[in-house]
Image (cartoon, rainbow, N blue to C red; front, side, top):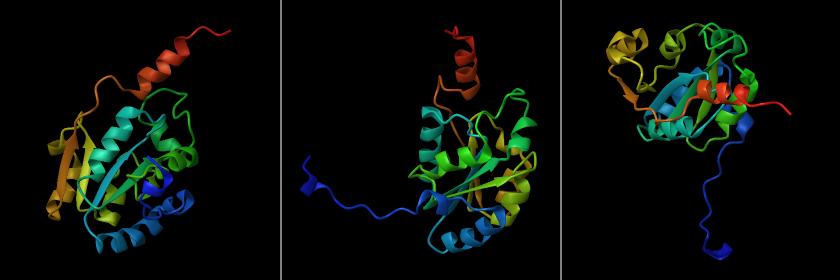
Length: 174
């Protein structure tokens, strides 16, 4: 491929502009909804791997915009993934997430579940990983009650941040 055959791509927002507090995310979400379907997902996304990237790309394909809400550090610690988690701070995780082309906006939430931020953002589509039962999640029930879609995307087999952390910790030190 020669440089002259490259087609210029639309300019994406700078990474820092894609990271916004929840109040600003609510305002921007309304503007995004005017342009098409808004998809929402959430998680810790501590050490980004192929499984995460594949999941986020599939989530984005369900609409025109993907908003990712990250658990704050305190919220992530309450999930019981281990005392050392998250390994990366909220701001570091937000920067990595915002760098992905599939992600339109990154925000965060302090609570144990994303229900409150979902109620503020009012996304058209809620996506969770394949290990969730959408029929038991209050946030899925709420999205469905507003006429939205709540669905899961299967995990990419063999990828897990927890297993990756365990592998790194088991390596001999020099």
